[in-house]
Image 1 (cartoon, helix red, strand yellow):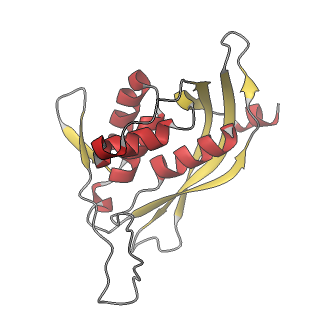
Image 2: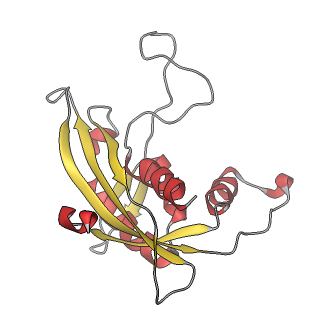
Length: 184
């Protein structure tokens, strides 16, 4: 369950495209159907400037502990190329290995889990992709699952937040992982 939560969270956080998920099937090969375009969500940086993250990444950020979420969104916004929103670039997280959760002895209900992956960056100039290492130790803790809200009171935003909190887990931190640490 922890491995799936971490994998799913990272995929939504780190896959960036101009295409929004659609409830209707679309095909890029048919000119009559197009996926809705993602305008992104603005994030204010410490210097007062704003940059954007993709809407799915912003929604997935609710899997993060709130203090870490603010810091992570700023970092994510600086990493997300503007070309994403124009459809000239796409980034896909290619996970190579997800370790098993290691309990944190100093914090009950908390674990660390190592992930070895690459961010594959695709553009017209690099149609086969350019791999950028994304090797992280992810820190996770259990949380209380929120009680189900009344369905008729849920806005789409509230429903999205509630859905990602149902796992009973949240990510509290990440740090770079040296590959030799993964084999220890």
